[in-house]
Figure 1 (cartoon, rainbow, N blue to C red):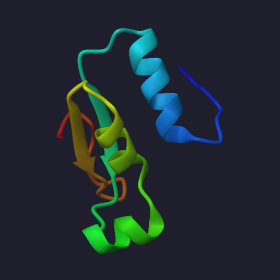
Figure 2 (cartoon, helix red, strand yellow; figure 1 turned 120 degrees about the horizontal axis):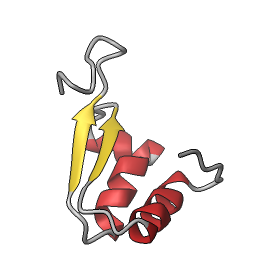
Figure 3 (cartoon, one colour; figure 1 turned 90 degrees about the horizontal axis):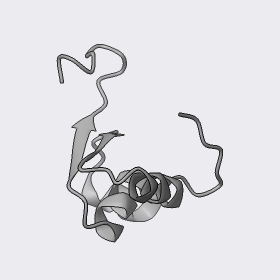
Amino acid sequence: MFEESSNAAHSILSKSEEYNADLIVISTRGRSQAATILLSSVTSQVMAETNIPVLAIKHFRGQMSIMAA
């Protein structure tokens, strides 16, 4: 699925509700809390605005496959 949006978090939340998702899996850069506050984070926004469980996986610059995660 591909969805173009100016607000990624709201698009993810909308699609998760549309598909009645049981779990949202999302990648994260692993920034510190201070960096997240200053730079914002789609992952943080999704986690804050949903009742669906969220699995956040730290991005390993292409070194780890989804199966390894």
